[in-house]
Each structure stands twice: as C-alpha cells, then as structure tokens.
Length: 292
View 1 (cartoon, rainbow, N blue to C red):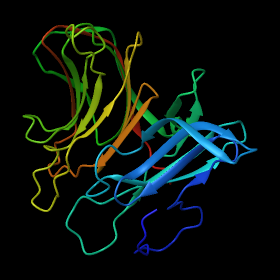
View 2: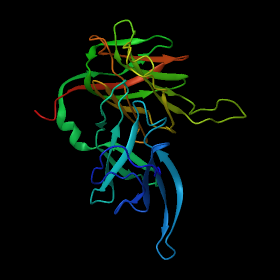
View 3: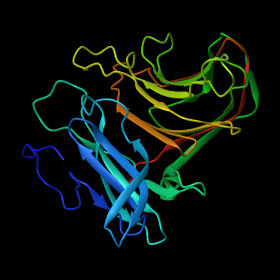
View 4: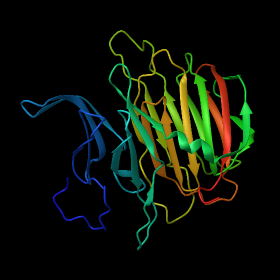
C-alpha cells in the first residue's frame, strides 16, 4: 500500500492494502498506486503464520494512469472462489473524478493451481441481438473487415487457431478507414522460434490509435505473457463506449479507456500476419443496459 493518504473517498471493501480471501485461500490481492492491482498465489503454513508464494500476476500490465486498471476489491463466492471488481481510471484531461467500475470477475483456481479469470456468468443476461461468423481462413497479411459485426456496446466471443502465423489480431471500435481503432494482438510464440530462445507468447491491448480527440491522454499498450499451449486463442471482449475489457483464455485480463471520437468507429476486423490462421468462430451480442 502506498504510504501517502488516499486522495479520494474510501469505499467499504476497497482494499488499498493486502488481504487474504476467506475462501480462495491461501492467496492475496494487493494494490499500490505505483504498481497497480496484483495477486499472489501460494502455500500458507498456519502453524508458523508463513505465506510462501508460488505465482505472481497482475490485473493491469502497465501504469495505473492514464486510463488503466487499479484497486481490486474481492469477496468470497461461497464455493472456493472469489468475485473481484476493479476501478478503471479516466484517460482524458479532466478536473473532475471520472473513474468507473470494471465488469465483475469470477476468480477460481485451475486444476494445476493457476488463477482463472472470467467475467461473472450473470453478464450473459445483458446479451441482445446477435451475429455469428463461422469458420473461415484468415489469409496472411490481409485485414478482414466483418461488415455484419458492429457496435460500441458489444460483447465478442472469438476463437482463433493461430497455426503458424506470427501474430493474429482483432480490431474493435474501428472507423471505416482505420483512422481510429483499438487492437488486441496475440504474438504467437507457442512454437520453436530458434535453438537458443523460447519466449512466451504475448497478448497485447493497444489503444494508441483508438482516438483522434485532442484531450485524450495516450496510454502505452497493455502487454501480458500468456502460454496458450494446445488450446486455440479465445478472446472474450467487452466494449462499452470508452472501455475495452479483454479476457484471454481465462488466463489474462487486460483493460483500458479508449474514447473514440468518431461516430463511425464501431467496426470489427481480423488479421493474421506472415502465415494463414483459422477463425474457428466469432459470436457478437449487442449489450443491453443494466438499467433496462
């Protein structure tokens, strides 16, 4: 926890320090204004009151501000997991407070004791009109615009087999000529690169070209390592006007504020680089308001 006094109102259950989850034990969530929201997984010895972590992870993969995630706040789900919600900072020049909540997350442990991060199941109740795109080859080095899939309040559920493509990319909030767009890119290192190095694959959320507005503060891309193994790449992407949240294979979470300035920045496209990839499917739902 940062040593300085918190400059904004305290909410009950707002954990600016470390806490044990009562049922997702032995694990800790922590937050600092310098390094953001993080978690530790480990083994707890109740006799010696000792916690020995075996894994460290993050809910943000860059600075807390501008436009980044901070302040995890969790509660036990009663079944050995936990529900978690975060704040997402503003990414514009403002005098007033403009933070928002993330989607609620469900945190569980996989059989091999790694953290699983998924949106809560209740979010599916907000699904409205849907579009489906079936299996298609993504030809190398060509951007494929999905004309039937549009929106700025949308849930996307995408499954891609990268095969031997160098990277595969999903673009959202895209204007017709890509003057504005936010990209989610998977750098495909889940294969032998050379005899000397075996880098881990990387998932990147890049909003550097998301907005042409003059008052939007640029945010560096969010970049997280992610081992996909034999699984296809699965992206659940939630777009809510100025917010993009990405759940990648239930293993990584990335989010940021993006603020498209154009009314026509509602498009979706896909791209594979270097070699063909395979789109297994893409499902999209227009999202209803929680107040409806």
